[in-house]
Image (tube, rainbow, N blue to C red; front, side, top):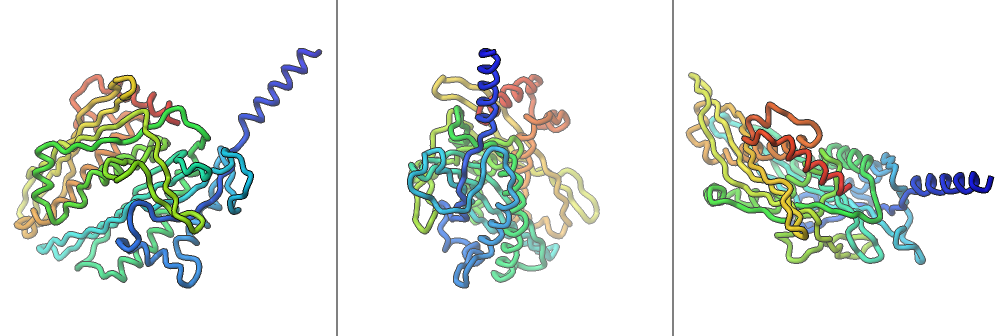
Length: 379
């Protein structure tokens, strides 16, 4: 009888312990490594008349979160809380890029709005990062001429109220938060091979879109979204291994941990070829070429090291191709993002058709199986 009681007690204790949820305090929205004055988001986050559009949309979104691993609190931090009860959730804008190209022959202007965020869980007692989920939101707008600043601000308002909050809820809802992670993963190095450097130098006007940080953020966001893993923010371009945020009207320096598993992204180059030509139109293939490597430096082990390529078919009218060098950089970026997205999905389900065109390794299935095992260790 005593033995039965002991077993019952242990079962009850372990069941309740496994169901215990962390307490997380809602910290709101913050600018990260990007200065507010360098963005148009500052107008959307205008607090001069009270609650900003972003604050209101984010608060509404957070109330929809129903996460099984933590409870959200809207109270201020209190004295005497244990370290495990001082987790804070903040949505951080890490980068805002607004680019446009004009295809004069087609009387068309394409505007790309790219927003990079980090959903950050940090410990308010020691300002140490617990987990970070990167989000990249892109919206493409077509118009007959470049958009005015007023139109761009209006578009940003809609993006924040809709796309940003949709992805925020979707990612946070399914993310399993832990007080401690045994393993972490992150992009730690971005390398440009000579062909890529040449391409970038020939597009000096749009050089910023090819900064290492932007490549790392883009790959990280697809890895996180498709595999439900936290990713340590890329810090190769940062002056320190930390990120600055605002919380409770004070600036905090959130210390970033070193990943256990390092992802090295090599941008090998870009290339376009004429695929088909008609009387009126031309079809061009925009190719992007990368190498993705995953290593564990502490053990000097390489788990994944593969080359990939991707081609994007774009159709132009003949009258616009005379000056295509002035605008085609954006299609290389499209091709690269499709590559990142497709690559990150191969650990969910292999796309044999894509892999056949993207990679020459006939044993790639085993490589992705190993990659998935690493991801599981980081959850």
